[in-house]
Length: 265
Image (cartoon, rainbow, N blue to C red):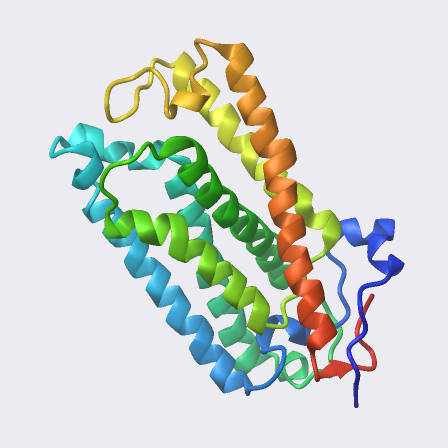
């Protein structure tokens, strides 16, 4: 039984929505407006493969920014861009794994009979939230703070552009929900990365140019300025990007023609 989509209400801001409870798990394995479970499975498999290929290529072609010294190329692992793209890739792989498992083993969820929010869907949701916010933030930070002109590689375009476009398109066509309060998932991810850069700096780590920082804006030899940049990125930029994505989700719900009468609030 379907009903006309409802706009977001104050119910979204209940304290319970900090948690991962959700009573329509089928929304994690279907499109919002149309399509079949098989089509959705193909969608997830395609993007999982796409991002796996892209992240492998970003490592293979690390010589484009690190030179031909393997000791510099391995510093791929210190950059926020690569952390974020790695999380995005993991998210698409977990998405695909959940859809495959539910398609073949949990027909009750696939047919919208069960309202059990399983542990793997909860884990998927957390990774999804982190990957989405991180993709948008890293794209904005790269072009706003890091890029200083010069040539742009194909890998740059994919890891600082296509990633954010994918997030918004995927969010616009799938039924996966976004909770307003789940912005803190991305904040915790950001805090984790900043802590990593502090430890890396304290241990004498350098970037691919042998500078004593990962990014100039995260130069811990000037802690005052660095803390200001880090705090603004984590406590302002990350939540704002999540709220943007929540707005896309809310708009999607408002325009949906396939809302169930039992849609959770």
